[in-house]
Image 1: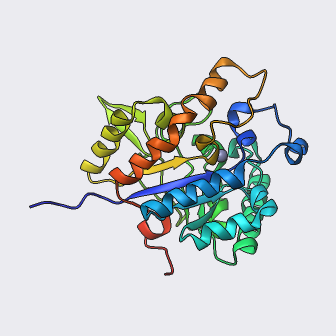
Image 2 (image 1 turned 180 degrees about the vertical axis):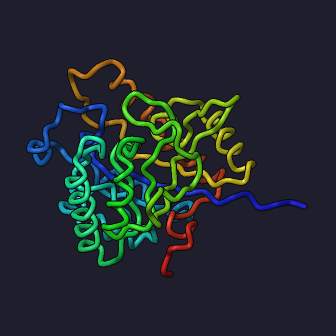
Length: 281
Ligand SMILES: [Zn+2]
């Protein structure tokens, strides 16, 4: 008897190429408005690709982006996708006070709901920045009206990571919120990140597909993420960043689009709110 494999979640963190943690310090916030914008064109390409494959996804949009491009937000929703929040200003949660984090989470929700005219239930912290020491963030998300979060990467990493968090959905202590950690594979007791982003570009596609299939075979849905700038090999190059940051950001950008097309075809995908049973319609 065959058993249907779990449905997975496709998600996009909608931000500009200059918002990423790898370029930390190179783009102060008061210079963002002067940078060439790529986010509209790149996000539109993803919306078109998802339409071509009949996939509905969750878009975690930065409040800063939604304020400047409200028509992009409406295009995402009109495409049948879930609108969720990536915070307002891409400041990692562990660099904010509890009060600052709460204000940012509320502001982004209001900006997004205003632009789209629909409710926002989901949140993803910039750079998966909910870690062991700032779990108060979950309480603030619940207070701001969010129902779920996908802000934990349960691995060891030099920038983010919450290595002893559960690998699969959990309810943080003291809340009714659901946290949906990005996908990892456990091999010989070690957690290997395979949820998307740089790992999707680094690993050969068949290896990545094998990893996701392993997770599905164990009965769990995969939570995949990517960024609009990852399908933009022609984005302006940033000078003066470390070799490591350069590699992380630019490695295999020219291959992402083709790999994503295979991924969309090889697995079943949906949006977070539908998988979690939160969708209104
Ligand atoms: Zn981000």
